[in-house]
Length: 73
Image 1: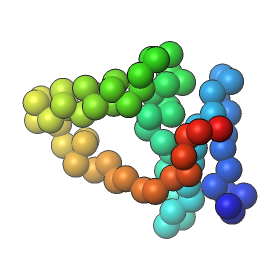
Image 2: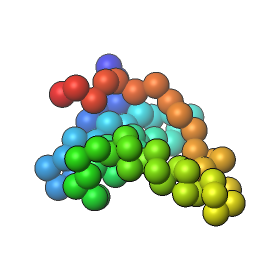
Image 3: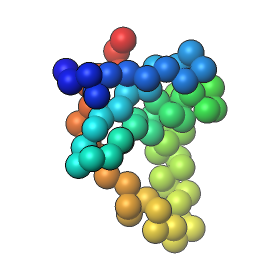
Image 4: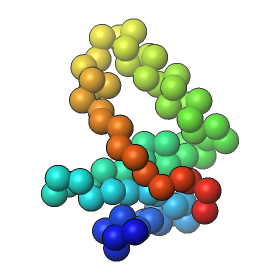
């Protein structure tokens, strides 16, 4: 693992990140967990994606999914 791919810590929560094409990409599931204290951040993200789609938001279309190391710390 490259040092640029290391975990970052935000308010005690581990957030996975990846350096890709000269930009940082962060795990949205990890960010949601850190910001909402959700016990099921993947479900929270799934519900949010559905809501964005229903509202006609183009934001979801711009989100890319990259392979990250497992969140099992």
